Amino acid sequence: METWAVSEEVWAGTARDLQQVVKSGFDLADDLLFIIESRDREFAYWAELEKSRQGSFKKISLMAAPVNVGSLLFEKFFKTKKTVVLTSATLTVNGTFDYFMERTGLNHVSEERRILASYDSPFEYDRQALLCLSRDLPAQGEVIEQVYLDHLENTIYKLLQITGGRTLVLFTSHRVLRETYRRLKPRLEESDIFLLGHGLDGSRTKILEEFKSTERTVLFGSSSFWEGVDVPGEALSCVVMVKLPFMSPSVPVIEARLEDLARHERNGFRVFSVPQAVIRFKQGFGRLIRSGNDRGCVVVLDPRILDKSYGRYFLRSLPVKSHFRGGIDLIINKIADWIEVIPTVNTWQHIK
View (tube, rainbow, N blue to C red):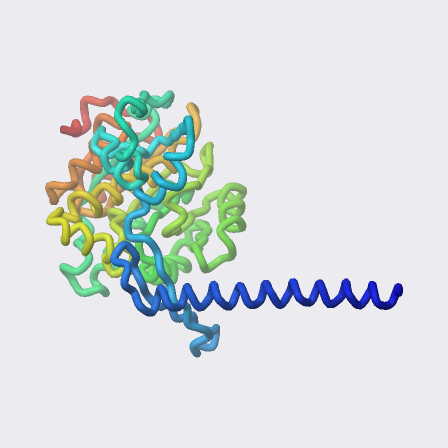
């Protein structure tokens, strides 16, 4: 009897395992059918190829993602909750919550149930932060890449000489990051400045800890480094943004979102691409001041912030009221003065 009981228990466990395998198989078949048929226009569909270290293809993944998550968030989350509190320093674009509400589905919540509020920062940004804008770097695409990279290399090198390291340089392209890293690594070593690169010198956690604890250090980061980097104190005294952080329109979900907006006769660049980049830009700016004692500068090298009409949306979304604009040599002199003494506002270009 004992043997029979044990056997029955084993077979029962095996049956449960088989049942789970069968269910997983049916779920996989449903997912494959959903992606292969690609009938639901509310989703984006694409394939991702993963390569091995040797360069050969390791695997292919079939992907699907909702084009607009707002309605899903409203139905699955906000609609089921009595109270939800959302707080962040980067919820508004040009002083309004419109973009955030549409992207998260809060625009489906009745107005009487929504409370929108924006509060002043506890930091004194006009005393603690210097914002510098330069037109010196040519727009990528207007010149051959070699010329662009030469300008970028020399511009960053000049800035790092005056800051003595202590700088986070934010890129939008990991390829440009790697090439600039390769060019500047030996040059900076001659000045006793240590360079760390995202994806080149270890994990995100490792290089952040090394950046915090090592003097005269520069960190080149992209993607995730535009947010979630918390380095209070003198270890981070300058943030350089190489380009305005627009998402590539070739990213499948972004491409699908822009196509969806076009089908509804809406300007995707104005209502989606610009607001998304503005929020990312605010996040990048926010890496500098992390406490009431922090002080430093932010340098934007993308001339579009000055030359394009949408540049004003980026500037109006920042907590500083003024900025300094000029060639890179003038900016370097301004930063040198800023490091020595607290600047006076009347020498700056006011944001309008």
